[in-house]
Length: 214
Length: 219
Image (tube, rainbow over all chains, first blue to last red):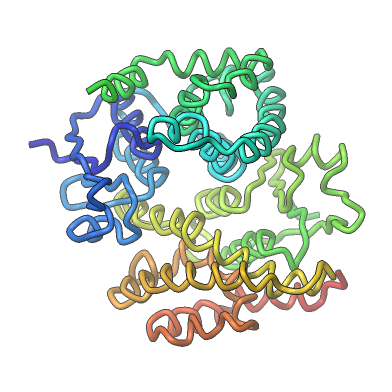
């Protein structure tokens, strides 16, 4: 039995963020499905793993964590010498990665998550897309991607010429949005388009996508 | 001239988050005021040189430029680990637990707290109208649920990530301070362990220095 367990589902963007990190680090783990339809995440024993009742939750031996971005940072540091180096450089380089991680979490993700929900997930659940929400958030995402376009003109990835956690954290929503009308926002910006194509082609990410097919 | 500069406003919660960290670490710094009223933070110089997202605060440490208050604080805590209060300490597992509660503050607590701070504390000050009662009611209910979880957590340890004060606790200070002066205070007071934790962290000398900055500022 693997000491690392992820409690979540392959469709969840937050779960995918953690799975991508585990695959990049080439770590063995067990994905423990959580029955969202039955509300398993809002009951014990799940609440003992995450009192906020959200997936994913994570176990490494007797360590229990939640919040996907805290989990990925733990994995990147604890297993620094395995697989891809995701948090590289000195304190100053790490600080720049830290800024990009906060930008993803606070400037990009709230907008990208709303769009992913409206355009990619609601149809899957037989719900109707809210066009006003889509229009509002596509305009907001365009402004964020303009800033990303300027940034990616200077380096191959968001913080430097190496792929880091800052790039990885974007993968779940970038992947969803590339399968919707929002793809145009990426395609019309050459550096963003190249970056999105590059990160979504990574072998570790392809393994995450493969899980969704089961 | 100090090597560390913070561009911001002493009444801005995000700026206060960074000032608190600098005071905890006993670091010299210069606070460079940003004229929000004239939209200085949205003009080309600020956008091109300091923060392309047009928000305060930003930090300069020598030739390093950073923005996003929580990223700035993590940098200060790591770069100056040997100075002042230890804010991000321990082995990887201990740091991971601090990391979890920093994410909780950023994603679970702050979304409700910042809306309440805006409606009840800042909107009146900026002359942007009266509090929206529906927004206040909805976010008080959300915050109550979050604080119930904090109450259980703080029954087990003095601070959120363990027995020592860390960045996870510090990040809450600006919003908590604003909300203590509003009707939301009742949500903290009605939970024994949360109330004790709030009283403890808001009494820290470094935090009191941040409040002095805010009192002295004319904006």
